[in-house]
Image (tube, rainbow, N blue to C red; front, side, top):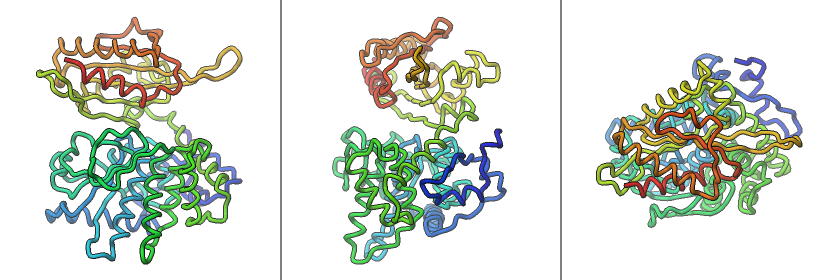
Length: 451
């Protein structure tokens, strides 16, 4: 571990409300917080509410009263936007109805494991700045659910989706009560309300906007903790690159939130740029992660329907990794190609994935010293879960042809493609904008047409 990059808890706390002009160069590592010893209880109303909310949820489950609860959940990648949006709306639902004849019980469910939260250093930093308890003990994560999602989805009152257009297959038994998303509308929950889709930088913008509108319409406003307001601003800041890529809607909501925060006297652009800089530095601090952690830190997967009567569904998963495959290979124990694929196979065996795609990206300098983003697509099919070898051959060829035929990607074989094994392919391309949002629909369409 590079101890020069670590901050003590005291130093982090003192930097939590640093002015935009302060030069905060370092980021917090998850291990820094854990090294402090036992769980440290968070301070402030937001941490207290979140901890109490989680306790009440688990007590009600024990009593067989899960039907009282609404899950507010983001996507399974568990990024800061999903987390902030889920926490904000769960807090709002509970507090806005607390003094009514029909109080709502809602909890934010982070659809990732507790330890996976620390694979996104920006999450760790943002939560620490919001004075939450160490070890993420205030939060409910997927691995802490006392029942499997398929069963629990039939018991709870319903789900609210944030930063997610449709529920994962395992939650399809739950009614969809509301949706907030800034991606493509997939038609899920047509009768849900509110049902908000809009092209903004951050989904948290949409949640915070609705929250503020409803809060200001109440006969008496409930307490909005500054820690939650700052978490909201951080999510909008990192997704909008400090408002540089913000829509008018992002900017207006951020200004409304700022006026209620401890930073109300500061300039909006200065504060948001400062937050973006701090969180961006944290987000990039992933050099210490091993291959398994890189694969799972931004993993999104679900079941996909096919027309095949033999295999009506297959499991498809995507990872996004900010390193080239060559650089990742050098992180393995043997620093060999086979080792990377062995680690990847161990991960997808654990998740029960039939077809996996690793989306890598890195930058290279041209002869003029200008940096260019290079993207890689790693395709792997396995035959030991739902499909046999003949089906694996067919599925692999179907997806491979779809990727190679797509003019948007214009892929080229990776320089070591000739060394790859059966049902393995790696391509490179230079479409800087073609990340998961572009590649996933291409591959999903191919899988859905595979017979």
